[in-house]
Image (cartoon, rainbow, N blue to C red; front, side, top):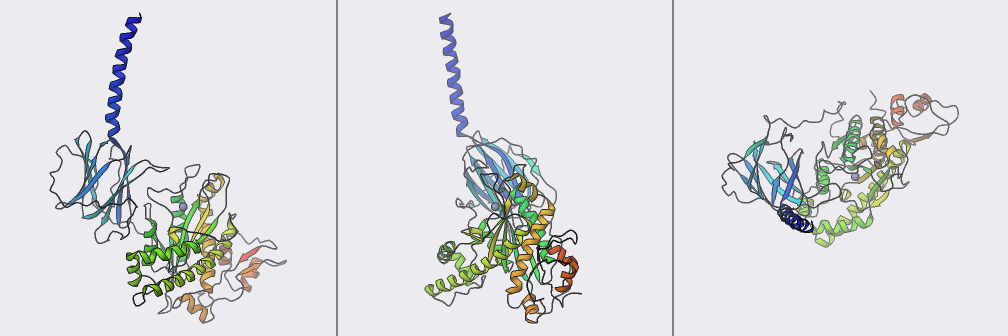
Length: 496
Ligand SMILES: [Zn+2]
């Protein structure tokens, strides 16, 4: 009995030993577990989800255009058929296992692209990832790296025979242009030579960065995009203002790139929309952030140190022209410019906060200051609105409803309008309205007194009843004594 057991035990340990050896071989090989694809206006991002770190190289081949990705120590453990390649320059993706541990992926293209690739270490949401960004030609890749681990992926076009064992795993039909936003509501043209005030609206996160996650699968990136689009719609419906979205769909934009886009859009104000998350799921309320003084100061140093950004400034991309100033003076000027846009940011932030506080509880009653990278634009006043806690079940539910999104957007728009009516940039339609006395003067707030009706208040401030309702998110005409109403400062002359 004991002898038999001994033999069995030895046989068993042999099996175990083999299993351990096999596991060792397996451990040296990472699996490509899934592939995700995101299309942005100027690039296509492929994200390979891996079971462990890998080494990789990327190179391009022309005629026909292809991108070859060699991943060492990897096996493909997913099917790629589900990838939607529409609106991308990718026509198909082929894979070949060149050896048990060497995976080659070939991306067939309908147009040449500039690839950038980098690895990402695991985070809370994802494991190891390999990211391949394919920048459309004509749209230069951003000068700033898209990730700290960014490394040049291009290799000189070594001729490579297409892998013989390759199979077509994903194909698509002819390219179609990116869907564009519907044109803004048509408004009568503005007096000649008067420009619109441009608001850049930045929907936080996007693509493989979902942002905060809510209890019922609510994702910050979707909530922020919905609110951003609604805010754009509302702003564009107002004469003298134009809203531009920094992010127009579900794709990732690096933080630095967001302010670059806003600058290209000619933004007078940058509004970043987010939703908070906290360990404590009962935390709730909205908040508004501006850049902190400390952040601004260190950012000044960073701007001066970064020759690319500096040349961007010198090239006239910003409002600060430094080309004829020495470095010391340039630093002082940039600092002043930063301080001025910081005080503007605090000013507009306070107005937005007040109005947001009418439609949702506030987390903090003052504009908070923090070193958010997305706010670090020295020449554009910038605020970040945390619209609520998506980690809070009640708020997550509210944030996902279109009525609450509309109310939030309306409150942000009201604050932005109040700021620009007091501080219109020179040359704008709103500045012209103010200078020619066409903006309804007086307080922009009214506390309802006994005996007042909504119609009476509308008449007194010479604003439309509908505009008054809309500015206060009122469904009907019922108002309460002591209620604070925000008065939309309608341009009198602009009324049809
Ligand atoms: Zn966020």
